[in-house]
Image (cartoon, rainbow, N blue to C red; front, side, top):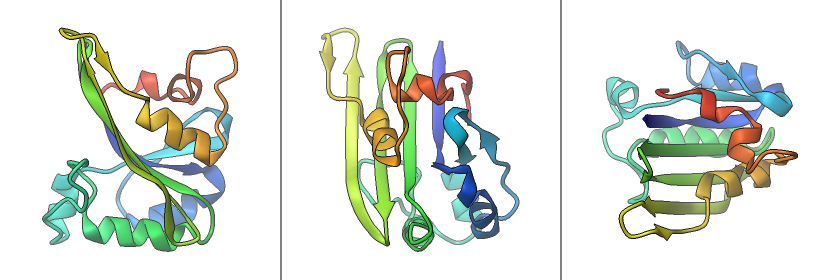
Length: 151
């Protein structure tokens, strides 16, 4: 089973500012009063923004990163990516606070064939936002991101 997620996660109090900054995109509700705004490079390219800003990210462009830095003056904002095919895949994450990067860019890789695993980049970013994992394995699952297979 595959999963591809690329988007912005923040507290729902920032939802209106987020949709104003990225018009035309649909916010998806998450648990613990957070939201996800899917973001992909195809949409960024339509806005004339071609290149990812960090080598560890496929989707985050310079223009989008600048918007997220500005939004973070109103509350913490995370950009996350997770791409898995079966047990192989990677995650990237970055968190902004008050205009500055406070986490990342971080990348996690998982390779089933070698058993190689690195710390969970996305859950680390969600933890920085204040998400708590409670009774489930990590913050990714606690917010319900696992229910989105392609966003």
